[in-house]
Image 1 (cartoon, rainbow, N blue to C red):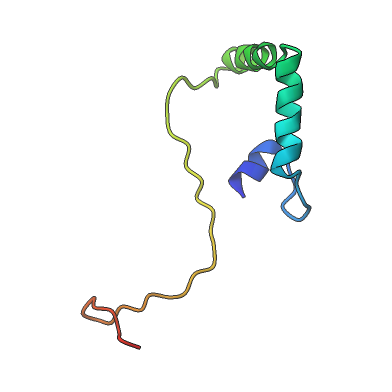
Image 2: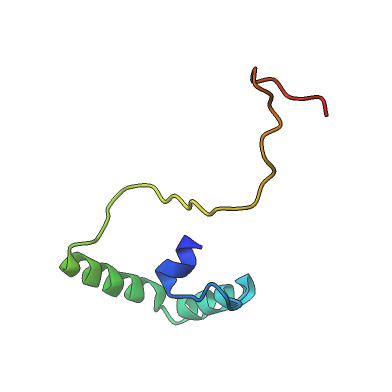
Length: 79
């Protein structure tokens, strides 16, 4: 969900599948535009003072999961 928000993609609408994105990437590479676009984006981020040179990306998407099956002593209940 955090990546959708970052990219401006709606949470309630479908998104392009991986083949659409991959085809676009290959189109950019065929015409030598991928590096040019990346350099332009990096320049814009640098001028805005938000260019990160190192770090980690963490996606804390919340998903449904069953509650813990551990009992009060921290052991797994057999049921």
